[in-house]
Length: 67
Image (cartoon, rainbow, N blue to C red):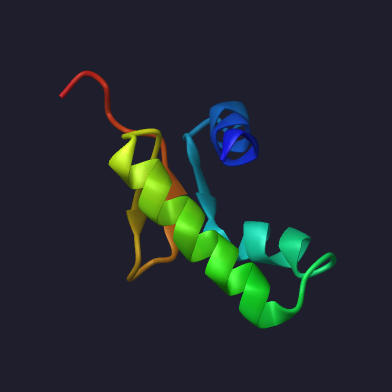
C-alpha cells in the first residue's frame, strides 16, 4: 500500500486510476491475482484512511484532510 500512497502523493491532484496499478501488477501476477490484490489494498487503504476509492470511476485519491 505504501507504493499506492507514494504514487498518489506524487500526483499534483492526489489521484490515480486503479488501472494504473493493475497494469503494473499484471506484469508480475495473473490478472485475477492482480485484481484480488487491488481489492485487498483498497479495502485496507480505505480502512486505514490512507486513500479513498471511487469504484464508479476507478479512481484512488488521497483523503481531504481539511474536511
